[in-house]
Length: 402
Image: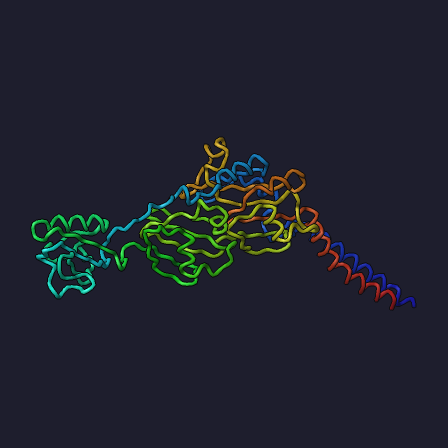
């Protein structure tokens, strides 16, 4: 018994010495036991002294006034404003169009009274006689060739204008000539529909004046849900996008199209990224109709109670200067593409933030980051010490029992 007691005391002393050594070494390196998920709240608040791509970072608290300014800036450009409602094309002849040309003259017919004419158009006696010419395709110069009339430029003119010009050229050659011109195949007045549609196609326009939804329906509609589809119209050098749901809700956005417009249907082009002490870290898609900050945090699973710093939620964005207060934008340094790096701070301890966040819009490629609280880092430190100490204590107790 006497020989066992010194050994027990020696084991206990060794364990105590090991524990003290661990505590000392851990306390010296405790500053290194921090979250690896991202910067702390303090580091982000001090970011205004740093730079991103040589542009100073602006720290802005999310308030109702800030949300209102962002909303006013993010108001979408409507199709009714740009590119605007197209003019009805009427019956304008273009290159590549195919024309049906019918010519008549009163008796006594001199040019078009032969028996070889179209029996539906020619007759005997005192009635008017005429003929239907073979189909004429407008050539690359915008011209067609008509017997007794010659080469005639028709591109850019209406059938009525061409008819009057033919009659004028036949004056003195035919007896009271008449002409009827019809476009039977339209090759020049088309719009192009591509993207997430059932069938990409070139859709011909008619004098009716086809509108955007008419053309989308004509190619079989979009393949994706309406709420997740954006329609882009390219007219010349102007490109404008609008959610399909907005176009359906507002008849003014169902604009009349013009020749050579390009309609592109885009599926789910918008995402935001969530990092840090949230329910999930992921790139999350959202609808084309838009998403608010409160909805974004909800989709990310909210803040983790055990980890998150409620005053340390941030939204990172390269902001358009016109969306910021002029006093901030005036002195801020910009990135090469003219944007200002901005960090919006979200204080979840402030009850008013739950109203402001309902109006604050999320943009494509936004990054939301929630930092760890200091207590979370302390808990990590405690867990590390516990994982090292408790096994040694267990071993020491076992030796004492023996």
